[in-house]
Image 1 (cartoon, helix red, strand yellow):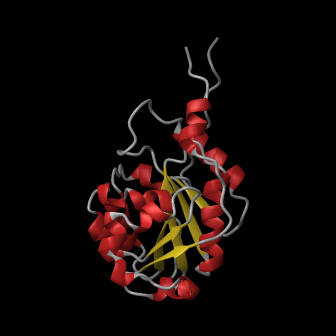
Image 2 (cartoon, helix red, strand yellow):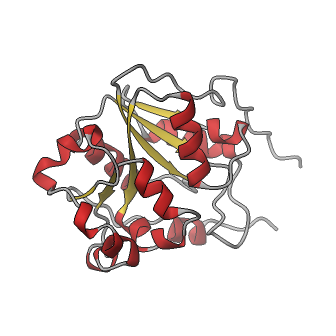
Length: 212
């Protein structure tokens, strides 16, 4: 029996969202395979603590640091993210796919080139800070955008002693001043605490039945 086809991505899904001058926008990228409550808590914490106007939830075609079986179809992940992120300030988008981008550094360059007057912040979970030094051109990313790192269960102490955290130690903004981050010139970053979820995309993928 032929499985039902996934809905195709629309032109709007593949178009970079608007960002007028001065808009405070969080960039929250990843494969989100699958998205879960932990991702939503990161997004909500960033929106609230950084006083963002928008958060672009950028669903990527894949992640070069994640090996193994290919991710679920992009359309399916987009649909799950939209179902989870029920907030008018959160824009779920797949515009990265239309530009055939593989690395975050290229995504940052694209956004800053096409939306140069908005105030962008890169948003990541603390587990990503622990491996940030493995990202392509990670130092360049840190010098082009302020970064907000949101605490995740089991990922508090190790990320703060990671190579990237040590490299950027002198640029860390106190958490109490997090609302100032979107207006700061990079490099600048802060570590945010808030509600946490123990859910993990890796464990959810491992629990997902494999097709025969």
